Image 1: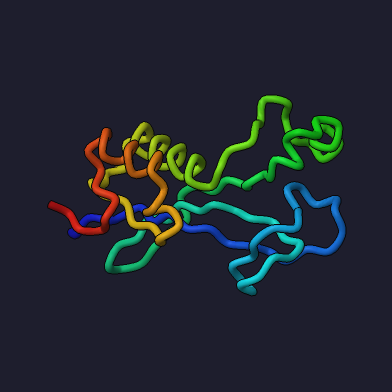
Image 2: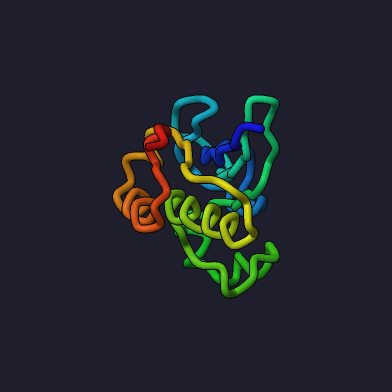
Length: 134
């Protein structure tokens, strides 16, 4: 049986209004421009025979995390702080490894691959971020 690979990527949902958790005027990869949307960082586990969702984190913009009253009204716990998408990308493989998910490298798009903190973390953990196992 071949090994599976965790894949980091994000997805966006276009939204109207400002009540949905995390909705803000931000880059929307779905449309390629800036508009009102939510952003979710996803970790899937992919193999030759298919893939499955493993973890997901809603990316809360700083405009949300600075407004604790807004967060409370939307049900966001007080301990949830701002984190960049790559920082969320560090948390998910960390959790997957702690859960015992077997992998030796992580695939991601260029936005994650060019982040120095994420690349450093993967190198320190001896996880190859380039998509090419050694």
